Length: 470
Image 1 (cartoon, rainbow, N blue to C red):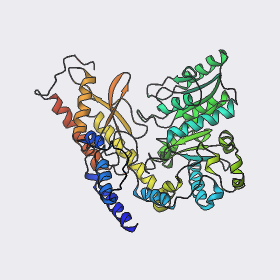
Image 2: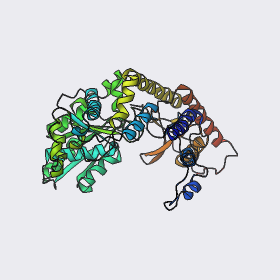
Image 3: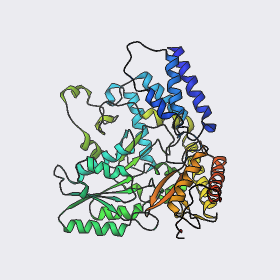
Image 4: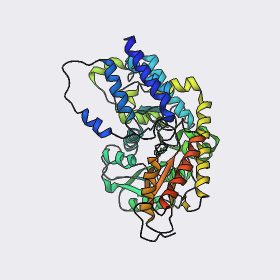
């Protein structure tokens, strides 16, 4: 057992140590490797060392979402101490969903939930649950709001979210039993934030039509652009119409630890529920989301079930909440340790400093791009996402920027992604990883500018014929 553990640790340590200089993407031969893994289950086993090598190679043939050059989306890079927490949790293999089965470990998870509640000034009666990610948290939020506001007959219920909201907001509503025609996409303003006046008009129109508006979801950081909805105003609208006010803070939530974030997120503390994704701006590995609810009994009421075989597990909820009483899953992994261990080890001050650094790096990137001739940077960033494009003197801007993104990513030093804004192809850079620092962002700026010059060179391939609107 020790030999296997040491061999595995050496592989992981080497992998993590190599992350800063590993290619931002290495997909050469990845499909061929994947094809080799199509196989039947073996009758005879294979050496552990050989299997470790296979897993290591498979992990290398991928986009390096844990490295400092990954600025395509918003995972946090994964703290090594959290990986050790997962190793410990899986090694102990204790069942923690019912507090009576492992009270102390269940309290660790309950403590983590309480820390998240404290981040948003939630009262002592607030409760929450750690989920597999923000999508499941948003789903549980819809279930909780449906139970609280509509009861068992919810056929005329209507939900509202921004047209810029994460896709899981609408998906959660649909999976919770609401047809797509009951899911409203609220228009946004020029900064791509939810238009509270448009929200009010839509609610009033639906009520006049005999429908039952019951839930509105604001975003504390959209995936597309990092835009933050006016939560104080949206919350006022929700309360005026006796609706459940939910905030999807999967991306932006941890930034409330910073002074800037407390100002930016004014009004979030009044939300009935909040979604968080610690595997984003809390920097822990994939697989941990969270839902916290101001009135904790409503979360339990929406998820509680009874079964004869559970009769001897009752009695601790007032002392130590059981995770299974507040979420969908009865069997689940011990997620709380992934956040408890790094917070206890590093302290919140270290997380706050890292988030402040990401905000500063984003401002630097924004300033560098917007002051470079030819670049359009449509939004002053709310958080750490910078959408941009280059407008060539001639040719189709969308085609040019598709080629530009490909050229940037071919550097293998940074990896960016794209989206559509007003139907136009936009490149986006998101700075979230705890491994991303000033040196890599400066390098990204150089790579972006160099890629533009390469594409504008007279001998650049595939000339663009159509004039560009500027």
